[in-house]
Length: 294
Image (cartoon, rainbow, N blue to C red):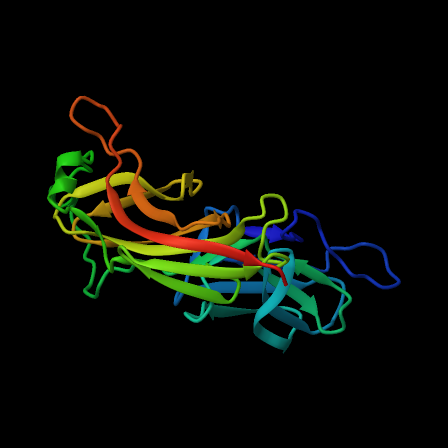
């Protein structure tokens, strides 16, 4: 896929001194940045190539992140690079998970800048070792069981569990691990830039891991709630046999004068007859978000 002159806000950005507008830098990359649903994996290598057009300036490539209205430099992929070149970039495991990342291609003299769209970085579950061998079609069909509809009674047998039985709340450069049935507190200044100006809620991400304990296939949506407000949107997870899924969800935690329940649950588990009015709960704890005058 080849994109010319794209920036995160959908506007072509050039800083061009004393010359007419032009297509100064073209780039091609396998980093997924088409929508917030596209996620790049920590520890995975992605290819990047670029070509200068109409100039001979050296190039710098940076990873930036826009969060809560502020832009931060997260990593310099390369400086004083030739106007045309290519590289492989492995996403560091140390980067915070979440949305708002983008790559910037900029000439060292600062005359030309072009960026990818924003993308999400997360921890991706990988299959453990072993080679994958091609099978004839008939063998492949026998080897792959059909995807089964999730049945509520299987949850009663402990089919899907949160493992470990904890979730991590991340906001800005802070993080808080909350265990099953624990009670934790978050305190924040009432004028903090991490508070959403429209809702006055704390913008954060919640991360947790679900594990399938059965050799069956399940597909369903999972979400959470803080007090009586649900995380949005719900996220679909698919389990093929014994596997784990790491889930990252964007949330807004509303300050309250009391401790509120924070819960992770399934949203569309089918019961015999097609009803979906049961929401199996994987995790339940208590959280108190407090704001204080600065």
